[in-house]
Image 1 (cartoon, one colour):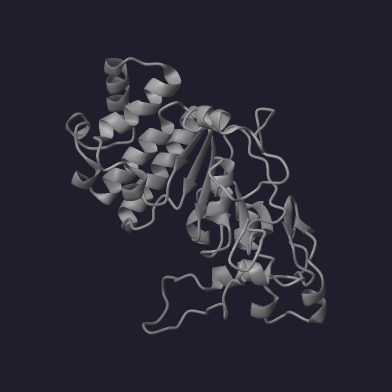
Image 2: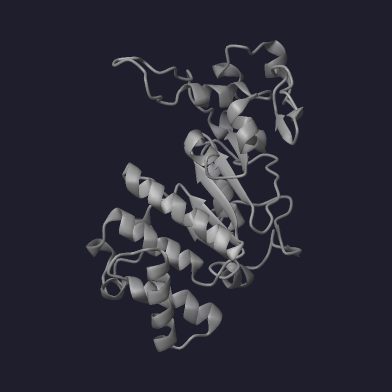
Length: 312
């Protein structure tokens, strides 16, 4: 995609599969490419960007598909819970009308039938006083209530894939837990695939079957969430885990931090993008892009200085 510094690769070699009923977490710092990955899966990348490779859904090739085809898929086969519900919702329309819109467009329901289904969806996402909320505007709801409305819209047409991009941003801890529990229940009940995008490794690890750690537009570690959490292999993953707040720490204890920042896309180094922030990096790390190396059962990391292979 173009940038002030010339064309850049926002995502590099990102590859994964996600089947019905499976859950996958995508984590990393802000600016690592998580949201761009989610937008590309929805065909919502910037107009000036190009997608190389393949995006397949039920055997259908979507990379390069015309906008008319993407419009038929969004909200029907692929649903998305956006990061900020206040900007995802239209302030000029009631929440009931916004939930009903995909039901009319994709399922052909009448106005009355779509309204009745919108009420059922609000009840399903556990919105209190759902019948009264149908005619409320987004600004009349709390952050947690708006997030439930966004989830209801994403689920309206029973999509095969649900993408949740930082679905608990700006919510307090109790509401975060409720929203994540709700997503888990809906995936189990409907057999949908879930891609959960976040910067919080610990939170995601508890909610998904597999984890992918992204840095500078590339997947640097991937594997079953339990294995990645117990045996983090890539120095970046280990740094993220070490920076987590933990119960029992003495007051005033400073948490470890990862020095530096994610490199700019137009200044991406030829070797490992994490090398300048990594205490273990050497000249060989900076020379070539590291390949993905197996460190356990279905667990791999892109680093030439990996720890000993984890136990089977």
